[in-house]
Image: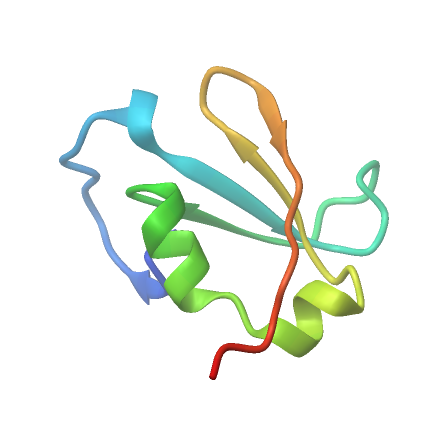
Length: 74
């Protein structure tokens, strides 16, 4: 399993705060799936170009879609 971009064996955090990413352009097709401890961890991991190109679909554990966007800072 991948958590926060690293392979792990055991998940030890509150899943109600977690975010799930399906690395696929089609929400109906399963790509690589990653679990993040929080939306902030997901935001730190996601590459802006991939977000702009809609390479991911993201969800929270209570089953809500996340809308991913990127912006230039600075």
